[in-house]
Image (tube, rainbow, N blue to C red; front, side, top):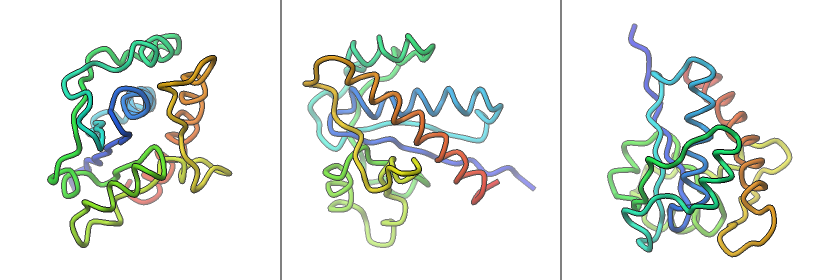
Length: 161
């Protein structure tokens, strides 16, 4: 029996703050759990503002303080084939979930979820966009994403492994 590969896509607006953080945090988690070979992990944005750019420096700095390197990532926009390729398409907020559902091919809607649906007590909520925030916005994003990705991995273990 072959081991299934689970494809996970994290999505925010520009793919420079929240979704690359999601990609990095989840990648680190599955590596620590010895499951890296069971996943393909990526991130994308619903808008084309930053295509080809690295994650926001503040995201990179906050993540690096937790031992997570985002520097090799580059922003891209969600593509039509993502809806067939990825098992989990995880929107960081309600607005991007709505944007994804608006372009989602019929029959693929079940793949699109809010990331915080996997964080107990935060279901239906949004990861706040830290781009214009002051203070600890990027740390808050990391805390929420860490919590949600633990729940996501538990869900995947229950339903796929």
